[in-house]
Image (tube, rainbow, N blue to C red; front, side, top):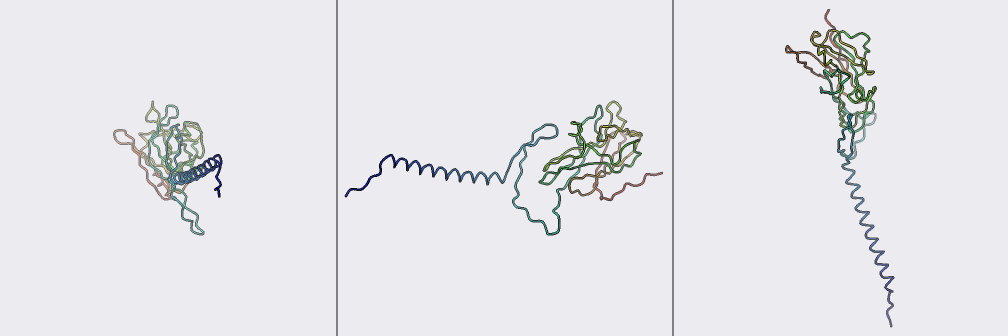
Length: 236
């Protein structure tokens, strides 16, 4: 009795098919592992307002707890701080500025900063509330609401001074029109502004205090006040 033999070509073909199957299984396993790893840390490039590329890592915190029935989830908090700005409008440079940061993990697409109260005498025809522009909007001559990505910070100039005449103080509206504050910087005494910051959850209004010291240096202070805060009535 003879044992049947498998022709060598068929044996080689079967071996090749087995190798291909094993290779496919290994590639599929590696692809699944890479997908799981990339879902934890995803890196992307974001352009700043001035064309600088920043590499930012977004971390996936995993599944989020469901919101309580009948209660809307909290929006990301917008934080406000004093800042320095290099934006210029002609020969006018920022006298004081703030920064606005989105501390949440989602985009905020309709942010807005506006001056709603002022302690001094308002310049003629100055619109109130006065909508303020970010550095990027000033550079690109844009206006209106702006977007803040996750953890993104944008600076917003509040007051400007003239480089040739440092005593002069100006407001600029969103169309780039200048309004000179008549008393000037050094004769005005301390001034206060109440700012409304919108587009995300905030802790209140921003109260900005601006004054000058005996040696002529400008000093600013920022406080977070209640939503219904009102500036004291000016003295008669």
